[in-house]
Length: 315
Image (cartoon, rainbow, N blue to C red; front, side, top):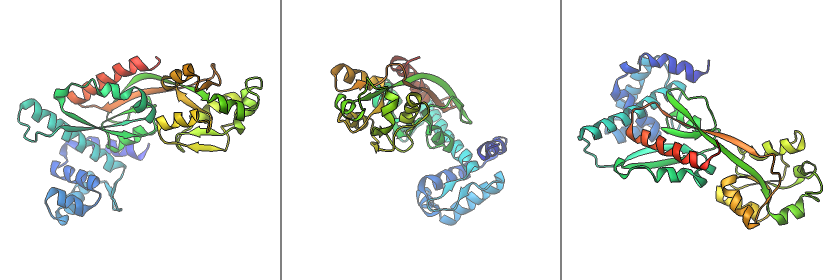
């Protein structure tokens, strides 16, 4: 059993007994990075912060923080941090519903989303959130295969992810498939793809320059293995960590790449890109995961995201 699951299991029965002051102190240490900074934020002494964290660790029977600079939560610490953030969200929602909120400040809603969703359909979902909820969206851009790690850490409350397996304490629902098309500029295809389309694409693709979003991006390799019989994309790789810049680099002829169909289709019609293979495309299933909270803000966001994905993604 992974450490995170063991930590969650050990803490689940005791979490209702955790002193809330200590829980909030642990969260402050994680957010501020050091005991001294947390003490300043909480208007207490560093000694008081240290004592509260140690008391919390004794209560849980777990080491909750790695005393590095900045400090980092352990797997068990992540469980407590997530609980602290959920508690803060529920407290704010309750105060608003009771009409006793005295801050007047909008609530921050941290969400992890992959770059291609952010560049194509996700922002239209945020635009549909009712103004009266007074939400500030704090978007964290991360690869869809890694957004769940931010949920697990408690850094975000919801995420667009490629994982159908729910993170502990989260719900999951399917959004649809984002389809990627293999494309290149017509000039690049003529110059670097060695006689394609007369020559099979698999014979020339592995030696051609390829565009990648970053070093975690494996979509080009996934496509290349389909057409080459197992070989990945070639060693000459350009990295452009921007969805718009990625497409523009392909249009400019720096390399070939796989591009979201939503972005590719207008450029294919305009003739600035050419489709390399109409049959072998790359489909990435996307899911929405969020904390199990009875929160009006989260509920409104989930409804808007699911609706926007239904319009933009393949089912």
